[in-house]
Length: 69
Ligand SMILES: [Zn+2]
Image 1 (cartoon, rainbow, N blue to C red):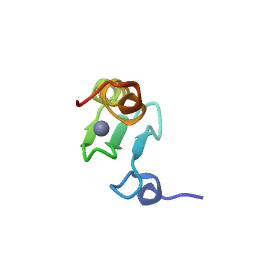
Image 2 (image 1 turned 135 degrees about the horizontal axis):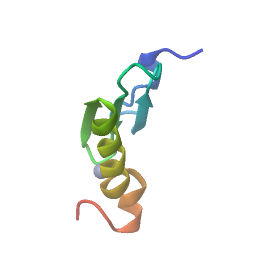
Image 3 (image 1 turned 90 degrees about the vertical axis):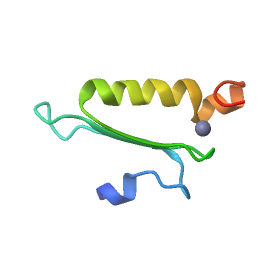
Image 4 (image 1 turned 135 degrees about the vertical axis):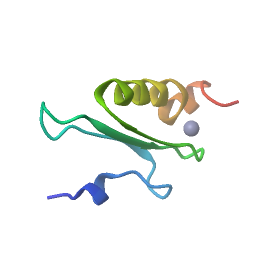
């Protein structure tokens, strides 16, 4: 079993984490990139934007030549 703290990305363990405990609860998300960028969001639409932005500009996107140059 994992706790929220275990799943939340940190500078030591970059990554993306999204949590939506129930359909009636707003989603929460956090992202930490190895480039140093950190983002958190609350609310379904905000988390969706966070995920899309992270995917487009951070994480694996760095290897594709995207994101910060
Ligand atoms: Zn990055």
